Image: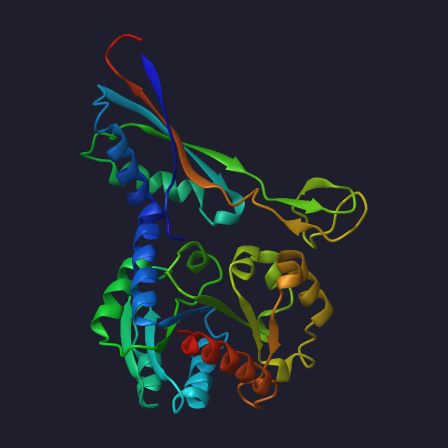
Length: 223
Length: 117
């Protein structure tokens, strides 16, 4: 006959344990980990490249490139003269903490390093997997449409900042900024940090750079 | 979209839970899945059936309890099912995301313990 065993356990708990290890490791070494998420083609690599160009003379920077199979993005980034480590997930739709843990150990990072982690292009799965990061950034392009916060609320909720890219084409394609912002407000409330940028025309980049400049300075200047 | 990985984790947790119980047979595993978790039921059931082969869970049924995403309307002070534009169906105010719909956990396992109870 049947007997019921109560469990109530988070199915992704193993990933959480691993993410906690990363947090410990990052704290000890004063690394600042940034999990960069967004759709394929949203501008995740462009965002990382722009940040490297702005900050590589001031801070140590390294990149972990997640990709389903290719090394195209990692090759692009290595041209900028920073350490890159490629993780191929072999078809999986997201990065998991275990592979980040391993990558961090293989990168031989210096103390006080900013590590950008480019996640797999996808607005659903990566948001469920804690990588032990210090912050999450979602890059969402105007070209994807103004309904993205409504369709993928968890991705936006779990991100600390929203980088709305390709704003140079927003008007041409009829992107409704009010609708987009309203959706984000419903999700983030007063915690919304939205930066509209174009990595092509460089519009809006100064605000984004100044935000990260303050963030990095205060993190690395802590005793 | 990551149901294979999820099924693996799920089976691992269930196996750990069953180590001390040592049941004669596992009848079912009940999981609670919120609609915002991005998990597709059919796909999860498929991987569950494939990956439980040869384990203590082989032949057991995966029972999925779905939970709807609910938004909170601060004007009406009430919860409502997610609408396309996040607007409250009663007063048209913009709702806020809540924890309802994000659930993703194993609730219970039903076993035949061979004791006839």
